[in-house]
Length: 260
Image 1 (cartoon, rainbow, N blue to C red):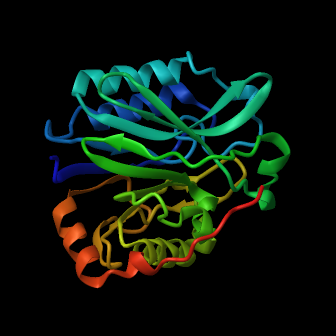
Image 2: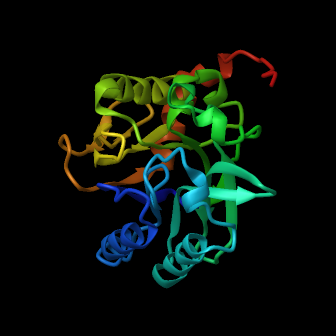
């Protein structure tokens, strides 16, 4: 049984619609990580920034960024995840890709598209949650705006780790931290939020504030405002399970159905 999971989130100042430069940045960061690292988490649209012109940057599932993720995962024997712009069947998706060390790929398409920025006008909605099984951990990966919708994240699958990759602007950053803590508390699970920093081509500013929160809402690792760098920790599954068993809150959760 794998009790420990060594996780790293990389907070970056993404270069607008420039996959080559962004991949180079992340590659340099990854090669400096401890060989004990199990999982690397990158921001939302980590190759481009949060763009509403997918026709300029979209890739296929056989594209350069996917191949790069597989190369990094295999070379460093770790899993890597983040979202990128994918074109499939003439449709664009804000797709989270989870790559295992073996090269195996699992995906999640963003369910809650950010209508305030017109994301729903250019990208297709996702319709299914994805629970990734990795080193005996059950991981639920979600994307940015999904954070505001607790029913979608509700821990009905008994997952162990909740992940949000994001481009969350500084003007609403207080909600970011509060909601990450809320999701961790209500679902009694480790929760990781990885955001970007800097300013994009639309002059939206991002302060990062990436953080790792435990199953009781306590911050384990975070970054100062607007800093490029990493958050990291060793998650302990046994500790989480002991607290879940002791308190029993998940035993009393509601049963419900989500309509699309």
